[in-house]
Image (cartoon, rainbow, N blue to C red; front, side, top):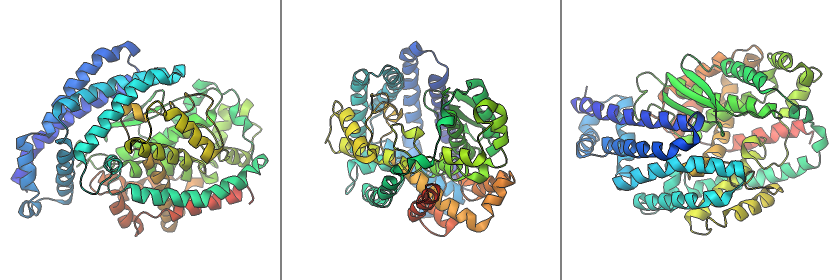
Length: 501
């Protein structure tokens, strides 16, 4: 046992307390808080953020971490404690490069930015959001300059915040492979659109019935409502306070049954990750998912690799038909399966099919690179966005609401986050390939045995939280590092069969 580590614990608990308060306010702002509350609430957010900063960046914590990072002290720590010290040390060194007063002011800015974005989206009014977005971008670029190390691009610094070790060089290669392999497939499918019909998904589906179905789906995949809740928000998301308080949101459209269904499965995948974290590390700096890419792999695995498979729906499709007899009573399982997997270029990332989805992410990735390289102004962003949609997907947004305003991420300063969505989909395919080697996955799904899958993921990924990074988890679980070839093979095989290519 390390006495120094024991001395560090009160500092961890203090920082965690402020982080919890900030997450609670953020959750409230996105779900129930009145619109006019944010101006005053943002002041409290700023003060709490300042206190959180001081709880992490102070001479006592720096001194303790320096001693704990020494080889002699490292030997006294267990694996989780060593991982915690490593992560906390890295985080402190990055955070202390940002002046405390700038960090607090930025936290207040982000608190105000989200409701401005939400109103701009609802009113199709990018001009009202642009000045706030400019402030967020300016702050982000300034902070990343503070943290930039020799050999790093400015955008590499932003990427490292969400996916340790993944750089522009690696991502350019990744997206290049996807572009080469998938563009020809998308073109082939465009010529066979009539083979898959999905009009029945766009009928009137009463929202109360949708909520009943989504509650069922969340419980079905294993979301524990004794340790979590579900609410509504403009943009579905997951947040966690610890492994016994994990919260998800959803959004409903009367004419889009599939949107809510797959949103709840997606967010449920995120939540299962957080609920599966080991009790010994929850409420610490490593007590949450290790990266955005690995986190997204869990949500995409449940949403797509499981949730869009025949085997997943085979034992429960009758439940969907019972809830919506007029809309789906005459629709067979095979027809439903084909409809939920239809591929067609679209405008909205969260509603995109699996095959075209990575191109939505690629567009955002390329725009973020342009922003950090100073190649585009905030005023030019909508036009660049629309041009890239036309170039990659052959569709042009009919409004900024369906274009550049569709995502909440930039209002929250999450630059460098979007690539994790595509990485997560690729990691999910790699994990799925591995799981099929160690268990009869389809048989388990047909038998409603999702517990076996959930426990396997918990044992090999979830319980570790942030103690291991993405590459370490993949190596230990599958025997190899990140390999996008599984993703390309998965999509090619699935859509070749679906469209009889």
